[in-house]
Amino acid sequence: MGARERILDAAADVMRAQGVARATTKEIAKAAGYSEALLYKHFRDKDELMLLVLKERMPSFAAKGVPGEGTVESNLVAIVHGGLRFFRRAFPMMASMAAQPRLMEATRESLRKYGAGPREPVRALAAYLDAERGLGRVAAGADTDAVAALLMGACFQQGFLHYFAEGLDGPDLPVSAAEDLVRPVLPALLS
Image (cartoon, rainbow, N blue to C red; front, side, top):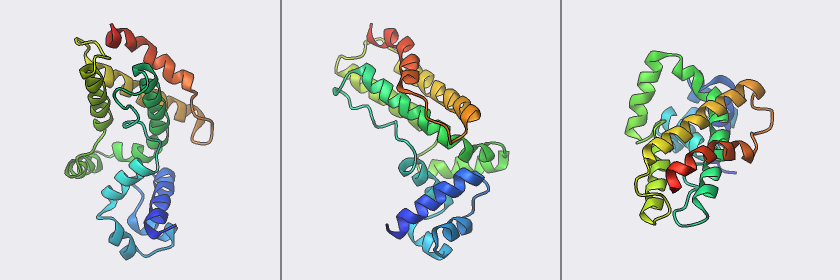
């Protein structure tokens, strides 16, 4: 395993244990067994490191829907199931940041320069649904933005509730939990 991969693994561990707000690049480098200077040879800043941890060390969900492949329902279930796992694992990393208004503002500004932020999963899901609409697999009048917001909001809420109840050590929610969230929106999409 190369230095970049070890640093990302260490960053994920430190950020989960301490939250993004309290995790420092110095601690992350030390946990990876490297100098802070080496960390900065691979990553521009802590924000880039955090984004890469979220993209590469967390369950994926935004890109699982491939327009025209599988069914819309099965793709949504896969996306939502990934979202449930992602938000459960992301919550302890992000909670400390959200609790500090100045840090939240700084993070918001920093994430903008990377074209990232918490709206991205909603936008990605809406784009997937719009592509399916273009293929005639989602109803022409379906409000894809609303459905995407409802599903990602439900993932966030249920992921948090599961984290609150089980922590990170318990099992993930089953696929049936994702099916239960997708089922009510299908009539709005497929009618």
